[in-house]
Image (cartoon, rainbow, N blue to C red):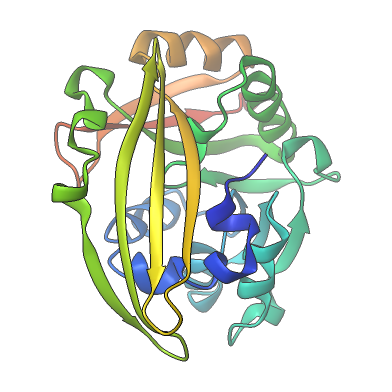
Length: 243
């Protein structure tokens, strides 16, 4: 189940202007180019920021997301007709054979259910051609990122085209083992309306993810440091065996 930020049309349109700075996408683009990938499946594509960046560089892209409102935003963007948009999670994937599967930003951690996580990995592997790659990122639990999820660290007022000023901030709701739940607040200056979006992320240890990848049939190629958040995140690069 996607969060309100992605499923509520009033909030889905805020994602791009509130997340305009995405240096992580350049790193993923470089990986796609270094792997000589031509076809890409972007799981959790959201409003299509990365999918459109790939398509603009000549990649053949399929974008998958469980939030219809986010896909509506993606489909309305210039160049969206170049991309095959699919609504659903990994269980909804049709037969594919791509060179690369990506899960950017919080996508991997947002799949909190262990069963769905395993299914996502196995369905992604099935969508890869033999020798194809999977790349995704996840926060290092040792850095305890949730401790910085406070109003003081996140409060912002953003001018959104066609909407006006939107005030936003995050607060931590609960930490239960590997699960951290937080709530985003959005206040619209034009009418005083306040909306919220609750999210839960699963913080998996590196060893747990490595074991999950092996169970799903991958060969682990590399675990990199995230260039935009050095020391804070792991970037996993795994490969479907060539035979």
